[in-house]
Image 1 (tube, rainbow, N blue to C red):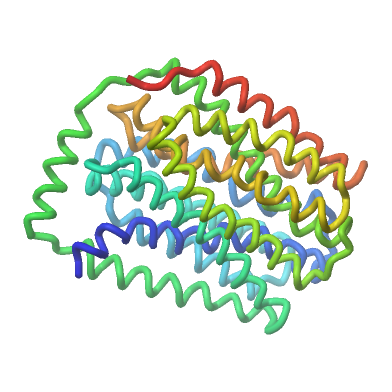
Image 2 (image 1 turned 135 degrees about the vertical axis):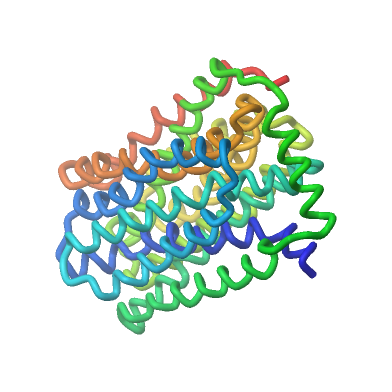
Length: 382
């Protein structure tokens, strides 16, 4: 039983952590309605969630490279989900910002050590294992908005469900990953020692990959915020259904993340990233310039493929380019790969306040083009 949980535990924990990250975007219409926020203020909630994580996460990845800090995993997803739950008690916009920031700290704790856990325990099938891990995160982002949608029916107190989920995750982690003395744990220790010292670092290629990571992160974050807003303001949908639209997008993302991992085994990691960017660009044009229900949902599948299919391959590419510092690489690819876009989101929100949502979303076109051009400049790691 423990062996099975060790294999599927990392994606489960990733799913639990990203319940909180995914729910935050779906709560934006709720905060707008209850606190009278504009688009800039709404996007700033996401900014606070990501700014600390963007700064701290690489440093925590470096710590994970130097020392074993397994407690980062349960502590990370617990801080994230309890912070989301505590928003039920928020009485001001400033309190929401503070709790959003704290949730970002939890995500920063979680990602580097969790990615290293995958690398240590499943290095013999790293492509498939990292694909499962990425799917867990995508599933969390899909289920998070669905759970958060309960606030539109039951009120803010419904958010305490996230704390209950965190407690289940902690119990599962304690059962499967603490007090290990069997052969699997010994094998994990040996593989960890080997993987920590093997290989070389290709900083030049990783520097180019960073622009691909930044591009995907911006696309991911901006769409996460503006899919429910676009659904309400341009498509004239109901606010209570906006979280379902976001859940549909993230649910597609979970499937397409797995598909991206499978494609990378056949095409190569870098070719899969290039394909994702190529498909994203025309689909986002339809999403922006066909402002009706057919354009909205018709563009969603290829647009989701463009964003989510890159997730696993980018993570593996980062670990291959920085073979000696896989924890640091994971802090960038998994951490900043989600949070970095939140730093840009308030500026897109400001554009939406001035020029409208559709015009603001046109910023995604040059961002996607940057990701494509930089991926074409890269070479497959040796």
